[in-house]
Image (cartoon, rainbow, N blue to C red):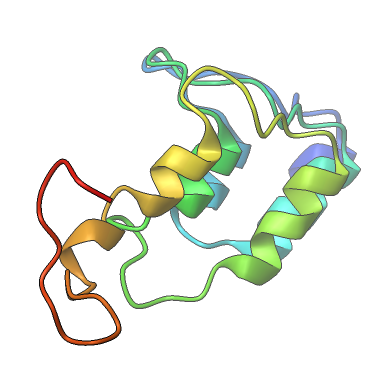
Length: 116
């Protein structure tokens, strides 16, 4: 990949679904690839045809279930990835969390739906 980028391959070329190399790296937990692409000018805010951006792919808890992707999030944010764009990355981060936490309050009583 480094040879291709060094030879002038565009870091932001989009495929048929709008995916970029950075999106593919983010969706496959490719930390070194993310750093390399960002170093060659990849746009951290360029989304696919569904407007899902690299940061959203990186924090998708259902896609990365069981993996800690926090180290790969920082380079995207430092490169200017918008954390407030469209469907916020935070929403993707907590999307699968609701099924992994017990819905009980600290004292053991169950929470009622619709009440806090």
